[in-house]
Amino acid sequence: MALTGAGISAESGVPTFRDAGGLWRSYRPEELATIGAFERDPRTVWEWYAWRRGFVAECQPNDGHRALARFFLARGTAGIVTQNVDGLHTRAALKEAGDGPPDAALPIEIHGAIARDRCNRCGLRADAEPLGDSLPRCAACGGMRRPDVVLFGEMLDSELLARAHRLAERADLCLVIGTSAVVQPAAGIPLATLHGGGSVIEVNTEATELTGAATVEVRGAAGVVLPALLG
Ligand code: APR
Image (tube, rainbow, N blue to C red):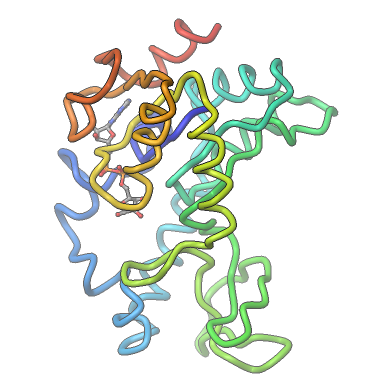
């Protein structure tokens, strides 16, 4: 299996969060990416996500996303768990699968997907629409719609997290790519592989909180390392 973070999308031009130039170096997450901020000032949070949504829509999957997609398509087994909400793993799977069903390369998106909305009251999901003068409302219940991403202070989808942990516990290898491994519960996923007797290979341009526990650390950019490692 693979667990990915913002670093795998860095070479696509999507900003990371905590390393040099990361978003949390310029913006305060507690003002933009928490459920409290959304309830206090939904317009500001919506504008932040609308900006990110537009930015990400212009980015393309890079060689790292595509190598990972090819690897899982060839195996025919789902194995990508991502913290990223940018949708680039899914777009890589569609590019690599040609006309075949890319299910095996579709990620478990444990932090959600920025291209979707979700009703903050009834949970109904819907494709994103351009942000207008009035904030988007749910077609079913009239509740406030919000980006379908996990905000700080919210629980992750328990079913997605359970699927990710089942993959990790059974995996011989967890390939951990481009994450600072500081945000829980995602950071605990590779440890489940180690506890199950498997190995962890970390692909990162820098050392992280996980490096000391990793079986192997590969210091390099995902877009260079993954095609070399996975073919
Ligand atoms: N190749 C590999 N690794 C890279 C690259 C690259 N080209 N560029 C940067 N990195 C590494 C950085 O060294 C860093 O360790 O990617 C990691 C990015 O870490 P973060 O910015 O903290 O991103 P991430 O770990 O995904 O954050 C987890 O925090 O803010 C929340 O919800 C957000 O999903 C996100 C979560």
